[in-house]
Image 1 (spheres, rainbow, N blue to C red):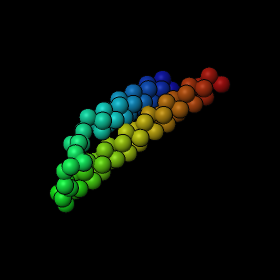
Image 2 (image 1 turned 90 degrees about the vertical axis):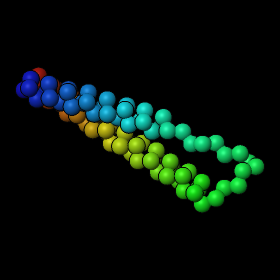
Image 3 (image 1 turned 60 degrees about the vertical axis):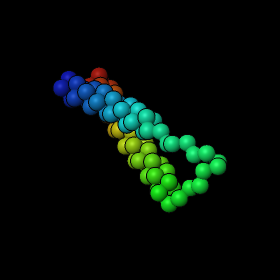
Image 4 (image 1 turned 90 degrees about the horizontal axis):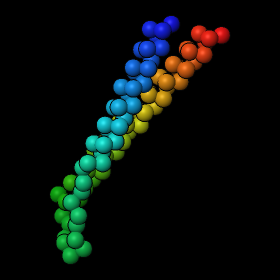
Length: 85
């Protein structure tokens, strides 16, 4: 039973660290600011949409890792509670 609790603790820590890393990565990529006097062409719009899509993908991965971490820690508490009963 202690091995299962240790594995769930380790999995919870690793997935929480992965979520933090993904959110860090999504926040580090900045868009180039566009002046109102500048004329946007297709490549500018493509670059903006691509940056939004990449940030969205990283945020989705971070949310999945955070959910996995929460599930692992909830299972760990359930196993610990079941072992005490």
